[in-house]
Amino acid sequence: MPSLPVLRVLARELLTAERAPRILEPDLVMDDPHKVAAYVQAGRPGGVMAAVYLFHCAQICEVIQPGETVIDLACGPANQLALVAQLNPDTRFIGIDLSAEMLGRARAYIAELGLKNVELRQGDIACLDGFDASSVDAVTSTVALHHLPSVEHLHRTFAQIARVLRPGGGLYLVDFGHLKAEKSIEYFANQYRDRQPELFTLDYLYSLRAAFRLADFDVAHAAYLKHAGRLFSTFLAPFFVAIKSPARRQLPPELKRQLATARDKLPLHHRRDMQDLITFFRFGGLGSSALRA
Figure 1 (cartoon, helix red, strand yellow):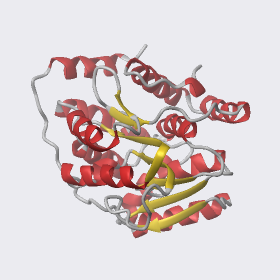
Figure 2 (tube, helix red, strand yellow):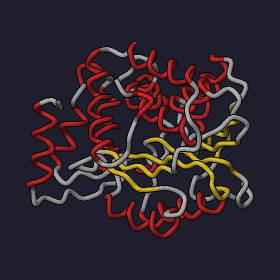
Figure 3 (cartoon, helix red, strand yellow):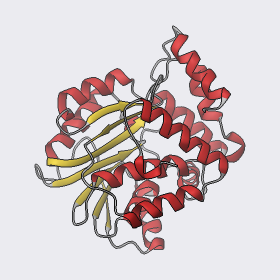
C-alpha cells in the first residue's frame, strides 16, 4: 500500500485543474563540479536514487542479450550504466553524454569497478552520426530525456534511435513525466531532503519541472518508435514514463538472484519506494517479474 503522502499527491493530480508549465533546467548540460558531485552521490549504491536505478536495471536486463552492442543515451556519471554492465559482462556498452565533467566521473567509476565492457563517448543524443543505420542491438536511457531543450529535440532523439536500432532490437527509455500541480512536483523533490545534498534536491526539482508531458511522449513514440516498443506510464499520474520493447530473453537464475540480493540490501524506506514503483508501473501495464517480492 502506498504511503499516505503519495496517495495525497495522486489525489491532487487526479482532481486538480492546474497545468504547471514546463520550465527548462538552468543548466541543460551539467558541468558544474559541485552539482555533478551531488548527482553522483545520489545515484551510487546507498544513495537516494539506488532503488530507482535497480528497478530500471532489471527492466534493461530483459531487453539486452550477451554479445550485443548497447548504447546508453545521456549516461551521466555511469551510475545506471555501471550497474547494468556489472550484471551483464558479456554485453558491450557505449555510454554517450554531452558533459565532459560527467564523463570524467563516469570514466573514473568504470575504472574503479574494473569494467572492461564499457566505452564512453562525448556526444549529442539527438545526433547519433557516429552510428550507422540498424547498427545497434539495443538502446537505453534512464531519467535523462528531460535535459532536452524542446519537444523538437525529443522528436530528433527518437528519430535517431529509430535509425540506429536494428529491427527486433531492445529498447528501454524512461524518464520523469510532467505532473500537473507544482505542489506535487515540490513534494517529490523534497521527499528525502534530509537524506540528500541540497544541490541534489534543487536538481531534482528542476528535473521534474523540465519533464515532458505524457502527451509529448505519446506523439513522439507514435511517430518513430511504436514498432520498437510500447509506451507505459505509472498508474494514475505519469511520475515516470517508459518505452520498452518486448522482453528478449528469460533472465538467467543467477542474474535474478543478483537483482534480488541487491533489492534486499536496500534500506527499508528504499524498498518501500521500489515497491511503490513496481505497483504503479504494474497497474500501468509494465511488469517487473525479476524484482517481485
